[in-house]
Amino acid sequence: MEMQQPKQRQRSVQRLRCSVMNYDWGKKGRDSVVGRLCASNSHFEIDQEKPYAEMWMGTHDSGLSFLIDQDLNNSNTTTGASPSLNDWIFSNPNDMLGHKVVQKWGSSDLPFLFEVQSVAKALSIQAHPDKELAKALHKSMPNIYMDDNYKPEMALALTHFQALCGYITFEELKKVIGNVPEIEEMVGSEVTNQVLRMTKEDWEDKVKSVLRLAFTQLMSTSMEMITTITTKLKCRLHTGSQVRQLTEKEQLVLQLEKQYPNDVGVISAFFLNYVKLDPGEALCLGANEPHAYISGDCIECMATSDNVVRAGLTPKHRDIKTLCSMLTYNQGLPDILRGFAVNSHVTRYIPPFEEFEVDRFHLPNGESTEFPAVPGPSIFVATLGKGSIFTSNGDHAIIEGDVLFAPAHTDISITSTSELHIYRAGVNSTFLAS
Ligand code: ZN
Image (cartoon, rainbow, N blue to C red):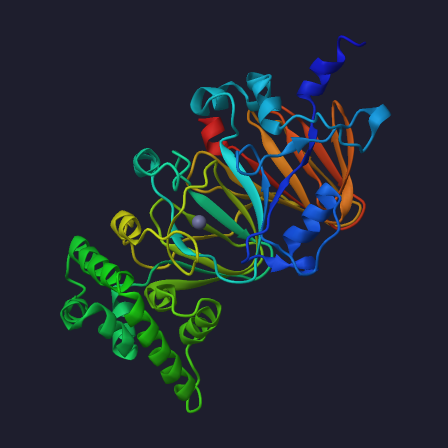
């Protein structure tokens, strides 16, 4: 018996204790989904004054997950020596990740990083480099760009979720320039006229290069001028609001100005799409697309990386030159994913990235569903309610905040004893099937 135990444990589902990030943009105290889940996951008291921004589930060095010892004789205790998920996977990568995943992404990390986010105030305007640029940035500025991997991401709304994402179309941009005189002050009349002269007949490349010029000018405005112009903009909108209904974008700009006074990111919001997700809708962000999350709670999944190039709405390091030169300058609304039904309780979201996909399990009280084995690893997080997860190696009672790692080739069934919400991240099934 003694000899068999380690091997059996290696193939079984493991409970994880996960890392919480207390960035200042996070929702505070019990208002934060992240706060509630992490407090339950790691058994701490919630501090009502403290922001709980992100819960990280995976193998990224900046936010490790640890196995919680679940030996029967030792139930619910965390021993001092609990291994990290990284060590656990590395002890037996082929069983944990599956051969195909090991072949593609190596034997130490999960290809994806799974997160819950609770956003109270806007995150920085940012983009994530593609694979090639990520390598180059890491090489030239390793203290700023600590990862050499790219970071496509997908945000799946848990509550109403708002974001800025990608550029508006040039027809919209022309209107904006007409309505927001402060933009011309920042980018100059020559560039403004170039934008206004663009027509539908212009080549995509030309439109992109003019947009790039205008955005780069805007983002490169001197600090002094930004202060003057944002003050002017604020006064104009406040006066305007007494005689007319401000547009949604104008209202957003005032909200951002309150959060980040005198920040170039406030005015740059006029260039970006204002996207609102209902719960259950997801936004996919490829490399080099500008975005900023504004408010709400979401499940986020991404390739394992923390590579961010920031340019506004942040007290952190800004790299405007890199950001403006890396962006695709694609225009128009981003695709919103609504997922497809795997069965009556499970919705699957497949982004156009090989590293990950997300499943949403919504079970009313007293229902069950199966998750048939896949040849890749999975992480499950319960965000609401309670129930049980059954595998051939044992049963696990689950409540909100519980996080489980399932090795490749694990058959799972889930039963609810109240309304139960679970999210699963796994390797993209299109990749696994190919
Ligand atoms: Zn991002």
